[in-house]
Image (cartoon, rainbow, N blue to C red; front, side, top):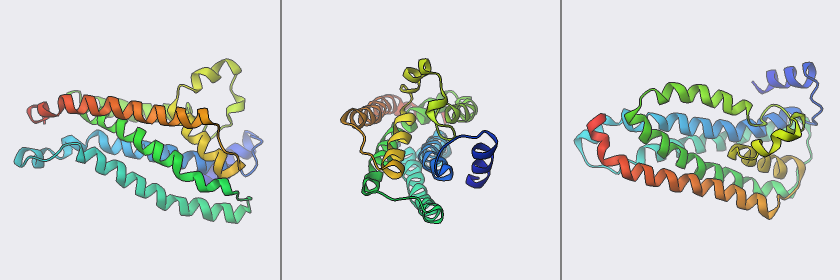
Length: 215
């Protein structure tokens, strides 16, 4: 997929990005992790209905398991990214050691989203179909494939409301460009992560006792 995207967007659309294949992989690595974690968590409670009906078990374990599983998958995908970096001979900077920060922030954010989605989906099953459409739209609203510079300046404030924009940008900054993001970038990443986690925990805790009536 990375080779196809590289061929299409670096040649046909003429995006002037050095090491475009690495640019794409650094974006897709973070975004696909979030997408896999939340999509898997969406039906995690419903799929565990037989177990929930038999024994008491903390229900947040099910979305948490999906998020951690997706996190491990992302870590394995990092090996593919490393191989590509070596093949294209992209310079590697010491800032790459900060790669874990956006990954952990995305994990926390994804867990919050997963708690929200898995609890809502118990009562409104159509959420699952709508979310699959939304993730595709969300990917195109995040600069995974294209450089953010191609967007009109008036759209940048809207783009900055997208949490994945900040996580993808942070990951690229430390891995590709050798720059350490500002303190504001760190605060924004943490703020999005823990805000969604807090909302998710509150919603899930409030609704979890009613799950058994709907599954």
